[in-house]
Length: 167
Ligand code: GUN
Image 1 (spheres, rainbow, N blue to C red):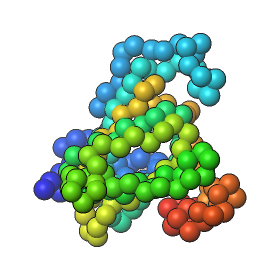
Image 2: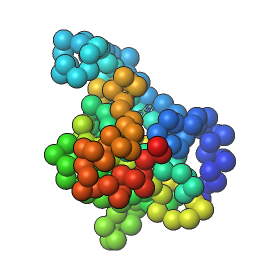
Image 3: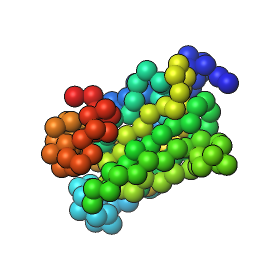
Image 4: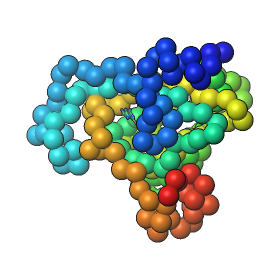
């Protein structure tokens, strides 16, 4: 297994505002015009983008949402647990990892508009994954809510929201 430090240094990962470290590895040259996209986008976007994403046990990826469907891919380290609250308020959890006999999945798609958070399954370790989206990622599509906003929207999920938001 690689170390967290090796991955960050060798792959030039940077801190991500949602928690963890990342590097964009792909941004398509082609663009989809504003007119070709749903109104939620408010502008043109690349066809697709991809990132490396490293999350460590001492941190978590806080609940956030984007317009795009996002596909997660498992690469290395401990499995990673995704917590999803759909737009309709349905909570589910999924484990992305290699142990398919234990119910882990190597790939998972989070639907655009769903709220999601992630945490490493284990102490003193990390999860190294990839995330790809189409249309391409733009921080204009990224919503990182405050805990109280999300708890107001989904009071029945207050416990997991409180645990997996930073403020
Ligand atoms: N680029 C920068 N941040 C992100 C992210 O959270 N997801 C994806 N897919 N790309 C990004």
